[in-house]
Length: 515
Ligand SMILES: *Cc1c(COP(=O)(O)O)cnc(C)c1O
Figure 1 (cartoon, rainbow, N blue to C red):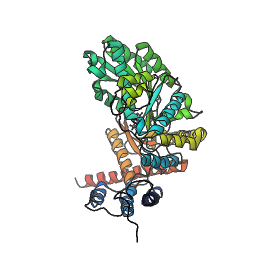
Figure 2: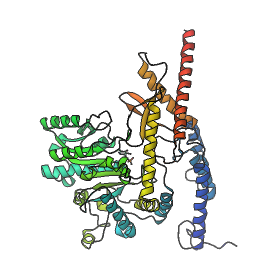
Figure 3: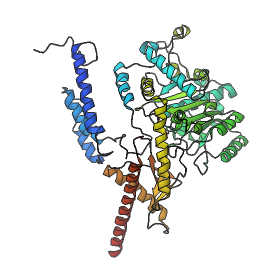
């Protein structure tokens, strides 16, 4: 006879009972098996399923039935409907977004993070985790060339880190220049004059942050880019002069170290000298490019980053961590005082006086995941040298891909000399060249190619627009990708392009005959 559980919930929560241990083991091994069968083992990156079909499959699940049923059955069903129709990020022909395959050590760490469920807002909810996060933050500050005065915090990603950079930049400027305390008094009367500068290729979250910070999108002044898609310094100087002549108050300059579309790296040192001269806060958005600091071959791309007042770095991109994982660093720990709150139940001032550490005062989140653990376990397992090799491989692959595309008359390379591993290109329509509606036709064709490939499930590419042109994008994060995969992808692009052109030609011919 089966032993009766000690309490109603014995088998539902992790604890020291036999029932709990057996249940946890069964749940985790079944989940592992289904992840393998329905996800890791997939022959192509996407099933190609259509929205309507997937919607109706999901409609068969009740969200909260009156009585529960067997976990193994539910995990199996989740595998058959969810994992099976998920994007296989590890597949070498999935090369669309800044969306990485996660490292196995980090996957093991995720199990420890969720099982231990530490919350990073107070010492009494995360003692060891608080110290480990602090340790990783010190390592990161050192890595990016900051001194002992620096500090930082883990975030949900680049969006939050950029927001924090611009929040501190705004409040620091307003305090120092206008003698006004934003946290207490809200925005000062001069706030409509505040301006942020960034390249036009900067991430959209610069504008989003400006809007959230009560400055409005119009506070963001976009600087032109040069032929390498980097911020153009002449244009920056011109904009700065204009802003000052108009009596406006540029308080922050955002340099991007790895633009989302092109992987372009703005000239950081030159930005730093402008920021210093004009009394602006320099924020470096290294969400994408930050990882190259670990590569002896490529870290020069980030030179000058140590001069930034704050830095965004994402670990769920080129650091190969499962989502979510990022950090925000600032050159001077003292800046965090601008956004600090004390809550009696979390970090009362008495505790702080006793030296009890708490991280909540450095974050815009309260309850927060212990994401530092997965980065720590990954870095220890892989080591700096092998990590650098992974990144070097992807950059070399991107350079070879750029070469291949530039030699192909059917394709057109948009970012001529990629510094990281993003490639923007397009299929050059054979019939469109001299027609007046050529651009439209090209655009439609490139959009259709991407859609058709996604629908086939064989290749997942991204898209973007460059000066009115619809382009295709390969973000080559996957260290398991080879030139064979690249050749396969480009072949599929061209074959699909030819087929679509042919079909369109036939349709038009048909329409003419019948008009
Ligand atoms: C991805 C990205 C962001 C946004 O980061 P999330 O982690 O998606 O919030 C910001 N800036 C750049 C340059 C990025 O590539």
